[in-house]
Amino acid sequence: MPKPSNECFIPSAFLLTGIPQLEAAHVWFSVPFCLVYLVAVVGNGTILFIVKAEASLHQPMYLFLSMLAAIDLVLSSCTMPKLLSIFWLDDREIGFHMCLLQMFVIHSFATIESGIFLAMAFDRYVAICAPLRHKAILTHPVVAKMGLGAALRGFLYICPLPLLTRRYTHFHTNVIAHSYCEHMAVVMLSCEDISISNLYGMIIGFLVLIVDSLCIGWSYWLIFRAVMNLATAEARLKAFSTCSSHICAILAFYIPIAVSSLTHRFGRHVPPPAHILLANFYLIITPVLNPIVYAVRTKEIRRRLAKMCSCGRRDAKSLV
Image (spheres, rainbow, N blue to C red):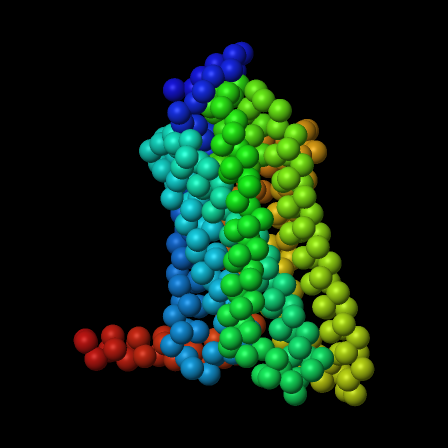
């Protein structure tokens, strides 16, 4: 049951609202959310299967893509099942420690994903600016170390967030006006001083969003300079086309998460439904867009998909 907001108390659990002010339409929201989640699971699962099964795809770009697919599966799966249970069953309760766990998983894996995008930008830089040394620089052990480094950075950056939140024992209310346990949505309910949590969250946001974005931007500036020095327009177009999938995925990830973070801290006049829908965007739409973008733009993945579909049709005909 919701607790009153006029006095402080120690909650044993929180209540998620789903999409505030649109509770009556939850059942209608559940349809697109469910369909998009299924597409995300199937799409990223397919990417993982194709990269694992096709030996020719055991290259840095596709290995990073498979890491991206695994991260997207975790990000969507740690939020969508609970959100759908809110929509369908009105199951809004989430335990205090489970809320902290969800907070850690969401923010840590989003940070890891940013690190993988940064690693992919470095891969594109080496592939275009030093193509003859690409295989020598980005060996499988180096790719594995880059993925491990992104994971360790994500865990180390985000570990303090739930630990700081756990220190807060008294809250104004146990109702979180959000569809998942987003860090600031939880700590803003506390009766205690949240300045340390707020400051640390802003520092992490700066390190992940700003620093990573600047590093990616610098990589692409060097790539742009190298491409413009190519002799023919056809060569320049071919070089740019190898980066288009990565650029689309970066924009789909960073823009919603940046706008959502700024809105939560400074957008006091933004309607709650708009903010919550935006906050869900990078957790569910990005996992859908990544496999679609890479499948459409990458010839090797399209070829493998076509081969899988043709084999499936032949097997179906043989059973008839």
